[in-house]
Length: 287
Image 1 (spheres, helix red, strand yellow):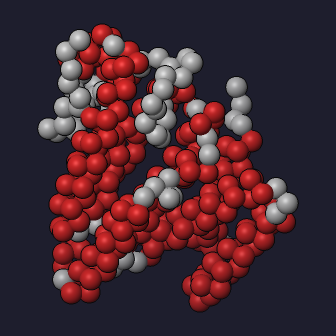
Image 2: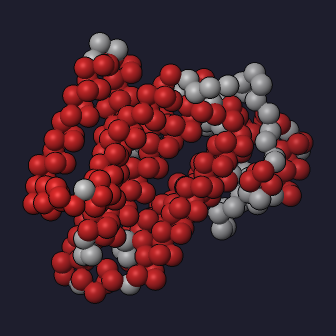
C-alpha cells in the first residue's frame, strides 16, 4: 500500500526544506563559485527559505489542510538543515546543531510515522509541536542552559565523549520509539484510549517483547540523551526527573484501561515483561 497524500506532502516538504544541507557539497563540486557560499552564505540561506516557501505556498495556498502540513514539515526541514550546517561549520556551536537536528527530526518523524502506520489517527497534532506548556518550557530551559554555560564555562561544552554518548542515546531512543510505532501499527496512539476501538489488539511481538511501553522508553532515552549530548548538567537531572514522573503517571493511568481492555492477557503480559523505565511498574491489580 502506498503512502497517503498527507505523508507524501510531509515528506516532500521536509526534504525540500532540508535540501540546504546539499549546499556544502554543491559548492565543493563547483569550486569556481564557492565564493558565493563563503561570502554570501546568509543571503543564500534566505533565498532558499523564501524560494521553497514561495513554491509551496503557490501550490497549496488554496488547500488549507495541505498548506498547514507544508508549513510545519517544510520549516522543520529548514531548521534541521540549519542545525546540520551549524554542526559541520561551527566548532563552538556544533553541539547545538546536533540538538537542533535531533529535535526537528523527532517532531517531523512523529507525524510521518503516524501517517504511514496509523493514518486513521493522523492530525496536525501528530507533529507534537503543541505537546504541552511544560514541554516548551523544558526545551527553552535546555537552550538557555547551553548558551549560558557556553559563554561562562566554555570548557564544559568540549567533553566530546559525553556528547557522543548523548547522541547515541538520542538516536537509539528515536529508533526504538519509531520501531514501537511501526510494530503496533493501528494499535498505537499518541493519546491514552479510554474505550477499546474495533480491531485494537494487544501487541506483544517485536520490541514489545522487551518492554511493555517501548515508545515511552524511547522517548525517555531520547529526551535525556539530548541533554547529555548538550553537556547540560542541570537539564540532564531535570529532564530525567521530569520525564520519569510524567511516564510514571502516564503508564499507571494507561494500564488501568489496558487491563480493562485485555484482562487476564494483559495481566500475564505485565508479569512477564517490564515497563522498560527503571522503577516504573505500572498499575498492578489481581484479577
